[in-house]
Image 1 (cartoon, rainbow, N blue to C red):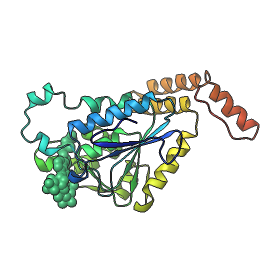
Image 2 (cartoon, protein in one colour; image 1 turned 60 degrees about the horizontal axis):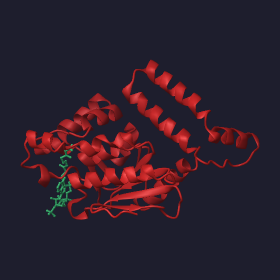
Image 3 (spheres, rainbow, N blue to C red; image 1 turned 45 degrees about the horizontal axis):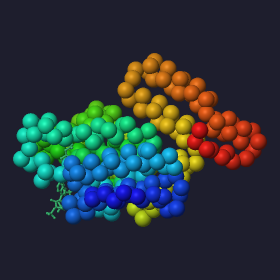
Image 4 (cartoon, rainbow, N blue to C red; image 1 turned 90 degrees about the horizontal axis):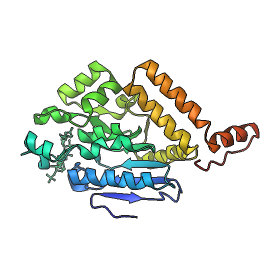
Length: 262
Ligand code: CAA
């Protein structure tokens, strides 16, 4: 497994043959998302995407922070031209190209780019002490990696406007009530619960999982009529896979399915 400077990558995670763990690893600065760290994240995601054994990726931080945002020290003197030249969000834009499900396991702060990174994942499981927010307004700027768009889709206009204009954080329970996170769990069981969720997904037919992920994401990018058509085509496409036959036969034969990923 390749070593990265700013993240840790573990596969197989806890011995599971289909689950990988990626941990952000700049603890001294609360996992501030430098350009180099984000490049590591995307390089690692693509490495796991290309590994046919990997079916689910978990992304996490540490006890204090998932990530406290983009690296302010790296940005303080930036000019717009500099950011355009270095294409600041290049690695972020590639996250949607990952076809395997990515679960964000969030402990502590998920602020600014940290909240945006969690929202770029497919689902979020949060510890009961997690805090989400887009505090960029407090430092004279606004979210730049999707916060105004994804938080608004998750919370609705009024709540998103409140949090983005005040910089106030949301606690884990409010985030769950609003639908931003799938599940809130006690801090000490965050990784166990996330692993259980990853196992539930990893045990399903991988092609159907990818097609389902793609169809859910289409709900955010297309009018309902087009989204329904997209879903129907992906539904038909699952019938080209051996795993669909295996899944339905196993149900009728009252046994567990054995999915091969084809
Ligand atoms: N960038 C760089 N360094 C950061 C950082 C960040 N986003 N967040 C925290 N750090 C550093 C601090 O400077 C501090 O470093 P030193 O020990 O060298 O002083 C260290 O991490 C620990 O942080 P604090 O001492 O501040 O810890 P705290 O517990 O008192 O406060 C916090 C925690 C409330 C999260 C606070 O650190 C904070 O407000 N951080 C900044 C949050 C923020 O504004 N994020 C948005 C960034 S901009 C962005 O993300 C734009 C975008 O959309 C892409």
